[in-house]
Image 1 (spheres, helix red, strand yellow):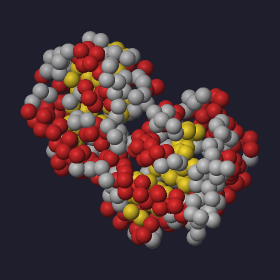
Image 2 (cartoon, rainbow, N blue to C red):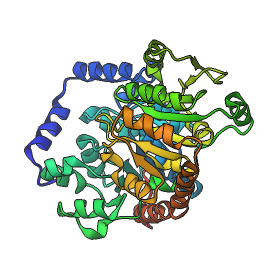
Image 3 (spheres, rainbow, N blue to C red):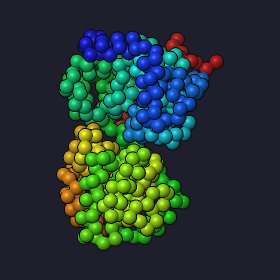
Image 4 (cartoon, rainbow, N blue to C red):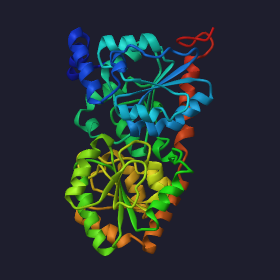
Length: 428
C-alpha cells in the first residue's frame, strides 16, 4: 500500500498501537449500537463463532442491507461453483439479509485493528476477498493484501471522497487486483487516480442485475385483500428527514383521493415507534405488524417486506434523498414494476436514477409539497401505468453485470487455485 499518504500511515499506526482494553471497549460500543446478539461480540474482535469449511472460501465484506442485496445472487453463483462463501457485515440488519442467502456464512466485520483483522484472517484464510461498493478499511485491506489473497472491489459507485482525497483513494484502491465499476463514468473516475486500466472493469450495476425480491405467495393475496382496491402508495427506506415530508404529502394527496392509503417502511425498523408517534400526531390511523388491516397507514416494522410492498403499491417513494444519505437502490422497486418518486440528493446511485428518470420510470420531487402533488396527480391515471411499463422495460434491458463480474472473479480464483498454489485451507 505504497506510497502511503500521512492519514493512511496514521490510521495504520493507530490500529496497531490501540490498547487491548480500548479495542474491547470500542467493540462493545459498536456491537451495542447495532443491538446485535451479545454472544456474537467476539466477532467484532476477529474471533470466529463458526468453523471454517474445507476447500476454497470467498469472503465478501458488505456493510449493510443494500450491499448484501447487491451481491446475493453473485454469492449463490459462487457457491454453485463449489466455493464456500462468508459474508461479513457491520450492521445487524445486514446480517439478517445474509440469512436469506441459502448456504452462506455470516460473521460481523472485525474492527479495523491489527489484532482483530489478524485473528479474523488467521481463522478464515480466504482464497478471495471481495469488498462491496466503497466501504474500505485500511487495516483490513493491508493485512489481506500482505497475505497475497486476491482482492476485488465490487460494484464501485460514484464517490465524492475520491475527489476530496485522491492520494488516499489511490493508495487504498491500489490494493485491489480487480475493480468492477457500476458505470463507465465511475471507471473513468477511478482510472484518473492512476490505476491499471486492465484491472478496472465496468460490467454495470450489480443491483440492476439482481433477482426480484421475494414475497410469500400465500400471504400476498391476503395483503391485497386488506387493501381492497383502495388507492395506495408506499414510502420505503425512509429516514428522519423523509418522514415529515411523506406525512405532509399523504395528507395533501388524500384531499384529492379520499380513502388513500400508505405503506410506510423506515430504512431502520427500530425507528418504527418514533415514526408511529409522528403519524398519530398528524391524526393518521396506524397499524404495525404482519397485516395492515383497514388502517390508513401500514407502518412496516420488520425486515424482509419490501418484496411484498413493491408488488402491492403501484407508486413508490424511495427515501434517503431529502437528507444526507445520498439515496438508496431504485432497481429493486423498478424490477417489480413500481413507478418511482425520489428526492434530489441521489449521489450514491446517480447513474441508476438518471437511467430511470430518463426513461420516464421515475421522477424527482424537491420536497414534501412536490411529493404530495405528484402522488395526487399520478394515482389512478394512465400516466402511472406508463411509468410502470417504462420501469419494466429498463430492467428488461439490463442483466449483464452479474455474469461479467462472476467471470472476472473466476479469473482471480483460478490464479489462486492454480496447480502448485493450493487453497488457504485445501480439502484433504
